[in-house]
Length: 261
Length: 294
Image (cartoon, rainbow over all chains, first blue to last red; front, side, top):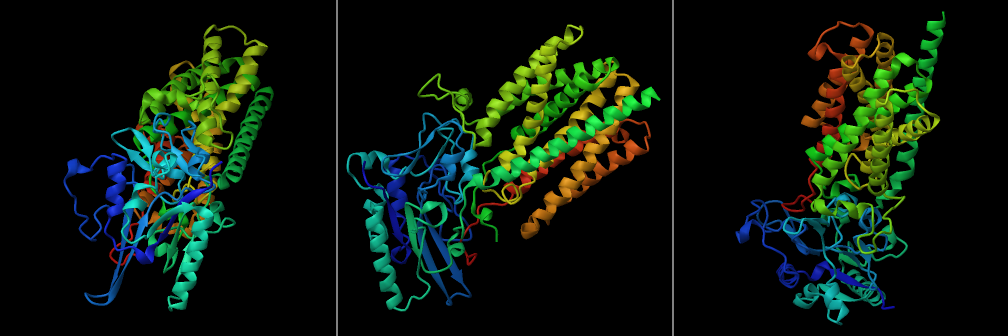
């Protein structure tokens, strides 16, 4: 059994070149949007805007400016988190979403029927439909490349090693060393997100080094599995059904009594 | 801010709204018809027959709508059988969309058998009554599981409250009874049957109203989602026109058509409830982090 593999993304090293986005689209042969004509976002230097079925990598530009000179850029190459406890895999009604031997989460395009339950279940808004395929799609962590011992296209293309690929245990050690280094340099806000195997979703196989609150990067503070609501919601629905059934029976009995009188 | 605001919309729109609406009516109508078959009187038979008919056609329409909404409709059977290991069954007891697919299938089978048996116009056998009992439970299940399905996601509103299943089930009961009032009259339903249906519909509406209030209260931490067109539609279309107005008409009948017909208004309210619940959540776009949005 191979080791669990994944990404460690050090956002402090990202320069926003989007080479990872291009490499991902290129290797996975993802179609262009809008017939290849660039659509400007209009309010950001980032024109990709979000992860979806044809953008499995997205470099987020967090442009925090107060006037033309006072501000900062944060950049983060976002991708599927390959959660150890994956909400998408949990709800998928066709069995299209599987966990691979590398502990990554992959959607099998020939099994998915496009019901879109996984899109609503993902706590990170990662998955979306690929309109060309009619199925839900997302990063596979380049499963085809990993099977032959190659690193994923995005990590290969990253010119600053902001995206690092490898065994999760090794990546965690590397991330912790980098965290200590940054704090020693005075970056007190530095923190790891998704590295804790005892944390939310059992840890993320694609985890991050951030220098602000997760919400600033568009990441939920405490991502959860969708099934957390199943028991309570089912109980309340059953109780309301019981009340309505009882009311109907009482009404029928009353009708019978009225007729007898 | 709720963590659900960082998620993406599944683009469930009109086909799913129609499915939720039709499935609720079908489930509610079958449940009422089954109760009348078990505990009703001979003069209730036109209502029973109408209920099974509504359930049968509702199940057919529901399955069709669900299939058409898929990105790859011809793969609808992947929800029932393992496509790579046919004929092994595909079933996840922890995934509402998975067990829901089976529930619709079994509900449809019960509805077909009950409708066929009822159309033979003979005294119902014990087997027919047992099928009706089982189908009645499936009916309420189909009416309510759609709300549970929405709660078992990570989307705003849906996953922020555990009350959607109960709300949809109560709405299924009220719209099912309303549909029986509407169609039952045309199929020779007796006055006593209609009066009982009106009484049950009023009770279901009151239960629905209480659950709706609890549902809204449970969403207090994300109350900003209601300061929108969808909040307005919830108040005017669902609460006022779809619950309070027909309740008034039930207690003080004015005997009219259109908006003076309580059954029609209940059906309108049930439809708008699903429109509001789906679109209010869909309108919360994936949070963009740009331009200092943070």
